[in-house]
Length: 282
Ligand SMILES: O=C(O)c1cc(=O)[nH]c(=O)n1[C@@H]1O[C@H](COP(=O)(O)O)[C@@H](O)[C@H]1O
Image (cartoon, rainbow, N blue to C red; front, side, top):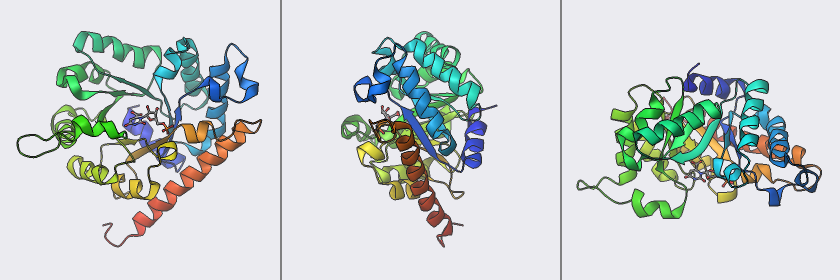
């Protein structure tokens, strides 16, 4: 099944646009999870079980695993999700970007080693650096466009000769040229809803937007939904990592994570409903 089909099914079956980010920081784990040799696996699978009913997928951030020499645990977590929640897509967040032959290995890492359904990539090296990912026909390729951090403006707000900001140029390039196979998505930060709306306008209703920046980074859910969703109230994967993972450091960490996922899903859904009821939503 193609990534976009799997994602649409997950949005509908779980009635959720919430993507749960897996950014495991052992220093923030509950005491009971810290001692084991498989602490990262134990914690992440606990979070997966607690939040799966309320999520449209999971986004493991590879640096949190690599820095702890925990790649085997990441692979095992991905296997666990595949086995127990096969309907929920995995977006491997690795933000890779390199020339073709090296990118072939990054694509293999994401799609073969970790069996991810989609991967985040950096567009800076251009079209041929994206091609190796597109060769994996069922997989999604989610390209950085307008990132949630303030420093993103340093380059993404630079303007072309005709005045177009670089992030919109990226959106247009992806929509008009790179997405010929329908595998692409874009990353836009919840901290910049005006730019999300501009990107949605440029790319049309169908391309999925991965939107991090709610929760710990303070992005506004209502504004994000209004700016990013299409007329069906879909089209976005709204990521929250720390706010869910570390909702409690006590023995109730699973319940607290589940409750935070429910609250976030519900806040998103309330905004979707008000969007769908809006008179100009033809
Ligand atoms: O590609 C990403 O996922 C990403 C892009 C971006 O613009 N901003 C951003 O925060 N992220 C990632 O999204 C997650 C956000 O985590 P929280 O701020 O804890 O919800 C982290 O894994 C970031 O690396």
